[in-house]
Image 1 (cartoon, rainbow, N blue to C red):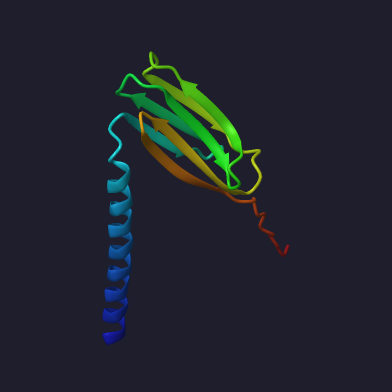
Image 2: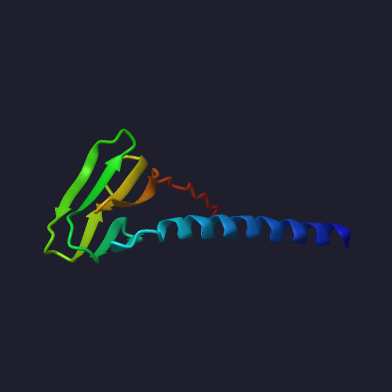
Length: 126
């Protein structure tokens, strides 16, 4: 009984620590007020990027690798207030990438980890 209670308490503490950390990261990213973003990766290894600008400034969208080399770069004109992009990241080598959006002194960035595919061996006895 004591072991199961300790395990349960440990799991609760572990989950709570990750929840608070995730909330702090999310709160930090919400400071951006000049634009709104939506970034996600699909199961088909495509990166969907949505940017809605709320100001009359230029915006810059970049995807860079770990060394800072630009993989993708686009500048949004002052007159453009929305952009929707689909980037195929299936052919990128394994590594760490950063997607950043800049506008009027504000910056939003996310890190993307690309890993190699691992195949599982299946052994069957007939």
